[in-house]
Image (cartoon, rainbow, N blue to C red; front, top):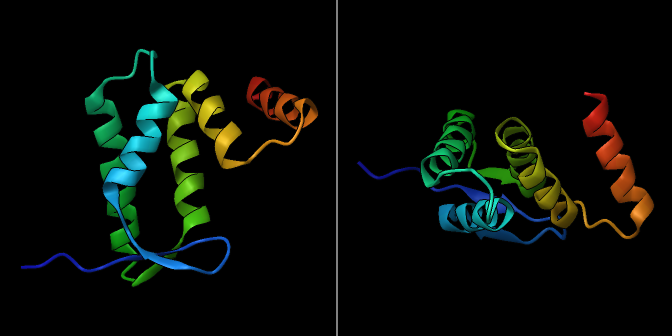
Length: 107
């Protein structure tokens, strides 16, 4: 049985085929030199994939995937979360970066 195809709708409206390796590589970069195992990263991706495919939709917004990754990283390793968030949210200045850190500390 073939797995259903899933397309990711990017912020600019482009559609691309869901690519597990792309998500896993982003996690690896965020978790580099952090005490996060490959197994933990695989579990994060598998959990998100289960959620995405359970929706039964052929398309998913890339922003949804990014938010789910940030939620998971926040629980796994806060430094990796901040790294990922800094790229994903494209912080333009120190103030926006500081605001994200303050939100994290408030939790």
